[in-house]
Length: 203
Image (cartoon, rainbow, N blue to C red; front, side):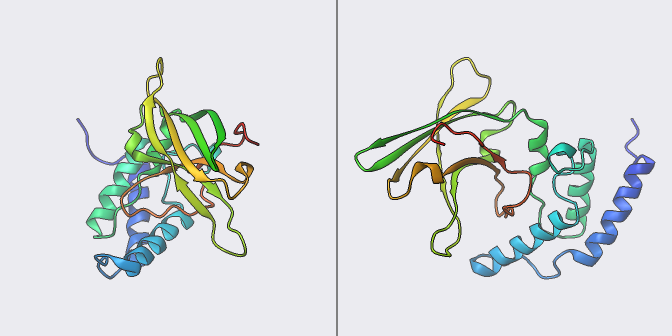
């Protein structure tokens, strides 16, 4: 078996090495606190800005549509450079992710949200399902995580996600979304790797 890079892979590796030499964080990742969060944010934004995130994500959704071997090359070179890990958002693009029904009921001053998500062969721990709402009074947007519940009978990897929120805002202001989840990862709001539910029943 030949483990050498194909010519296109070798060119990709060479370009990546040059980029890492110029852009990889020079300082160690802080152990915690706002300094750690800031380093992760800046690193992930740089990866996204220059096209190194979502290598195998479909081009129709903002990725580069490359074979999975390029993800392996990326991880290999990032590790060799001593840079922080790369979020594995590219692998999400190869799964048939979709939302099912999304409903809400008002109960005793609370909104009970229920969202079905079908993950194909993706590990449920690799994603986070949440509700997103724009900030109010010039404040930052807010997100509320949903808890994974029962497995949907008849589905290969479908689950119901639920949460209860105070009914202080209209349900129509909340949008379900599915976000890649990786320890320490920061996924900018504008990246195409976030799957949004564009037609929940409460709209």
